[in-house]
Amino acid sequence: MHSCCCRSTLLLLLLYITAAVHQASAFHTNNQATSMMSSAKKQKLNDDDDDKQSLHEIRVGFIGCGTIASAIATSLAKPEHEEYLSEAGLSLSTISVTKRSASKSSKLKEDFPHVVSVYESAEEVVRNSDLVFLCLLPQQVDEMLSELKEKGTWNNGRHTLVSLVSTSKVEDLIAKTSLPTNRVFKMICLPPISNREGCALLTPPASSENGHPYLKKMFDALGGVVECPTDEIMSSMMVPTGLMGTMYGIMKNNRDWLINKGVSPSDASYFVARSYLSMVQDAERDCRDPKRFDDLIEEQTPGGLNEQALKNQEKQGVFDAYDKSMDAVLSRIQGKSDGSLP
Ligand SMILES: NC(=O)c1ccc[n+]([C@@H]2O[C@H](COP(=O)([O-])OP(=O)(O)OC[C@H]3O[C@@H](n4cnc5c(N)ncnc54)[C@H](OP(=O)(O)O)[C@@H]3O)[C@@H](O)[C@H]2O)c1
Image 1 (cartoon, rainbow, N blue to C red):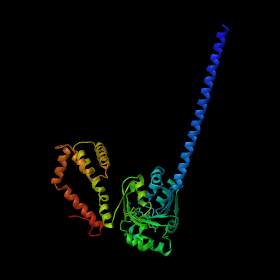
Image 2 (cartoon, helix red, strand yellow):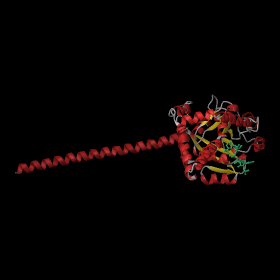
Image 3 (spheres, rainbow, N blue to C red):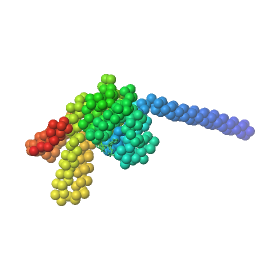
Image 4 (spheres, protein in one colour):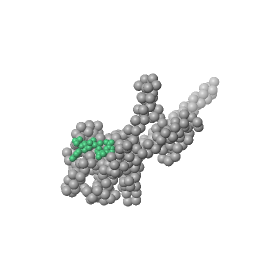
């Protein structure tokens, strides 16, 4: 009885020691894991700091703060776009804007108080920026550029000028600023750039040898950019941006046709917009592939409604008329005609 009691006491003691050792080692492992996690976390924080330090900091300025300046500034300043810029190796430091239009510059300041500064003069904007966007109306450009040149505002080693003015010629801008050739560009984009939508056009190509260190990366991060080798190519690329009215016209025509067939105006509008959205989204997938649109047409059911409608429109000369209207838009952009067709 006695030896049995002793044995069970020993057994209990052994169990206790085993449990204690196990617990101690689990505590050690947990502690080790906690300390490993915190050092990994610390490492991550350090990496983030290093990454931030290795980002190219950019001070951006806008001369003229109207519709397009506000859209680009908004896209650069939006906190949700920061990760796209940092993936491109860029970090926005400041945005300086001229006061006019006061309603738009004060709205930018209100929306992004920590990065936006509003200045009375274009000279102050240029002096506080490295990358300057010219966003004036064509008739305001010459006076502004000669004023800035007279005041010796441009710094050859620091400034990059990007003109959004469609009539700008890069050679003229170089002559009127004396900036180096690889620091002067012309760009076209539309207001949806504020949401990283659409696609900018840029000439001359910024990513060429001896080109610009970050301009292409910046606009890729803000939705996409196509570099145009020449001004002529850029003019042709501008034509589809002048066909928004045509696209809305087709949608309006579809809506009205449905209303004439007895569909409620609200349902017709909703259905047409949602259907076209899905078609455009489908076309946008893999759109770097130049055969994307052909493939989508090819995928249509042989002998089906879509294939037949397209053939009917081709036979009716719809696409010939479309080509003629695109040629007319181009000839207006090139200043060769007023763009109207008989
Ligand atoms: N809107 C677009 O979708 C778009 C797209 C691509 C390119 N663009 C081109 O971009 C340029 C600007 O277009 P926008 O639509 O943005 O025109 P906007 O809204 O009229 O902007 C022009 C801005 O310049 C300001 N301004 C005029 N003179 C000034 C001066 N001396 N100093 C400082 N600011 C001055 C105007 O201020 P006030 O209002 O006080 O006069 C206005 O805020 C145009 O050349 C246009 O062709 C526009």
